[in-house]
Length: 75
Image (cartoon, rainbow, N blue to C red; front, side, top):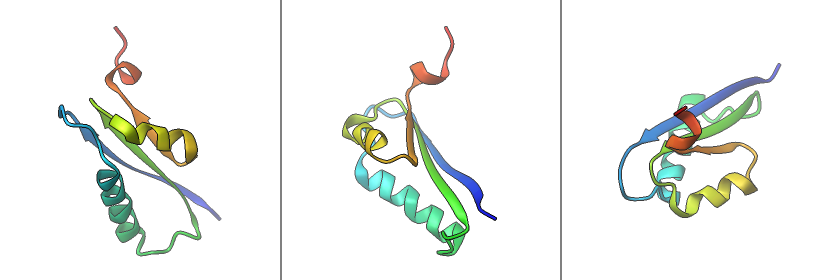
């Protein structure tokens, strides 16, 4: 049985999210899973004010998701 899990982080800073930030989130996820990724469908989500260049990764990778304030706030 495969289970799904989402590891996420919210950032509200003017500086953009970097690949180092994304890698740190992924490492935290692996620690939580204790390296056992075979039974998990793992996804990562960043909620950020400024996504910078990492947003292109979301288009390339199906398990990385990025959200800006306009994605989550209904005006």
